Image (cartoon, rainbow, N blue to C red; front, side):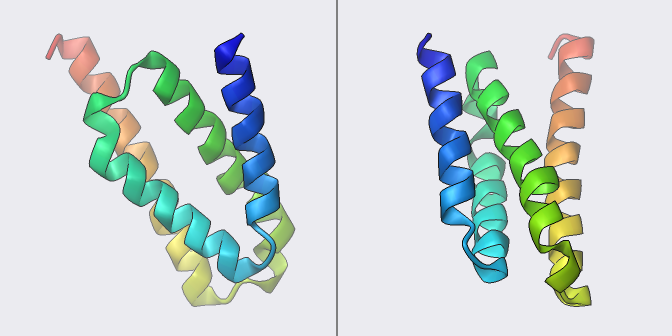
Length: 99
């Protein structure tokens, strides 16, 4: 039940905090910064929260702002997505290797 409340709060925050495309870019880069610096301490529940937030930023919020993003801003979004997916791939590889 607690996880559900956290996910709902994260979803509400995502839609409230991204009021402009600049806010969207800032939210996405801040999220990636947070995950990059803390991912090694994430448990399964925290990864679920992070995955949901990533989906909100890379799909829902992106769809809202994609038409107004410049090429440079699109590059930032692409970089954020690549970093997150790279962290997830590294984690999954380590788990498979038992490390």
